Image (cartoon, rainbow, N blue to C red):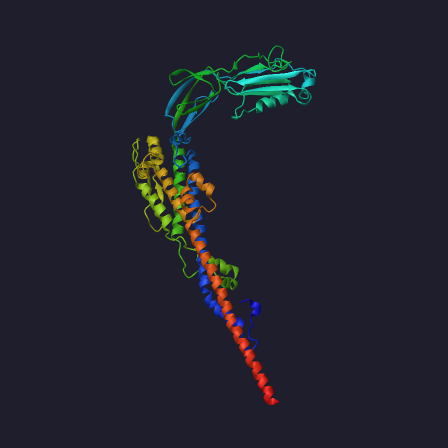
Length: 549
């Protein structure tokens, strides 16, 4: 009933408005319960998303620390990623004026003798003398006629070819530097360039032309255009004074080195990688040695850093899963909020939100799987280490001072393992399973960290199904590109808690409609009573008038 039709206490003197409010207060308790239940679900959703994001951050941050960035679409570490770790081995050159060196995990420890007979070179030419006149527009600098045409084709050894043609207004509007820019910036439909570099130095009025890379495989040739009237870049008496002939194949030259008994090795680049050792060669006809050894401290620091981050994660989750639940502190109703100060509301909400994930089955199961994986054998190890405790890492025992499941390191045992068998240490931590095996077998074949990442990822998927990605889609896809597939295909992008919230919204809508009808019903009855009293009062007044008359 519309409030304009409500009649309150005119005849009876009763505070009808207050009575209806009191009656509705009792009726509204169920609505308050629905609204509080919705708020609890929203808070729980936020906390799931917050802590699931922490798992993703842990994986991504520790991967970055290890230098792991090569994963398949299913989150499996590509096998060559471990061999490319640049923190496992160190390499030193006996003479850095001859070569700078570095290495990766695939290099074998030892000392290697190197002789550089010849460095690889690129093909390079420069103007044999100053160019005509000073730098300016093509017509002026090179005394070109209005009818002159500059046309030439550059073709790289890779088959990339392009014809450059300039005539008419081009001669008055372009400079030699513009032509160099056109040559350098050209890309074909596949994004490939011409493999050459053109440079004009105005300060000395000379032009330079060369292959971008070294080695005999880097080549080009220049062909004269059919309409050309000027030998500009190549040919007899060309305008740029370059020793270039049309149709000649111009190429760089390979270098030659001896490495650890392997002689006469042809190299197309002076940045050479042999047996996992990178060498930046600087001089020719020189000898030097490269020493490769395990960087014990750096490997230890990487593992220690991972363990510290893992322990901090365990402690954080243990605190959340063990957080006290205050059941007497339900979300505040609007009426309760109005009666409280800001500090009181803040304190109340902190207690109301506490313990919403206490003993949560999803996160608890996830960490239980991770902890069990720490003790399990890494099956199929080939370097003599199969258990985490073999390298001096164990789990702490529970006591009042720590959280169960944290890792502790025996420094001496770990460093000795790194020194004596670094390949075994890497394998027990990062071993990759056979991708064709079942999930059960793959888990058994996985290294400890590989297994941990997999367990965390599976736990994250369960949380996503329940609480959604919470706007962290891109972050989760970096963990595993297909991580949201089941959520999209099986849950249609709607998390379980979101479904609960939708159902509660429906209950709230129905309850609000019911309460509105109930309130209208009360007012209907009180209005009818007031009208009846008014009629009785009118009849009484009429009778009194008759008797008095």
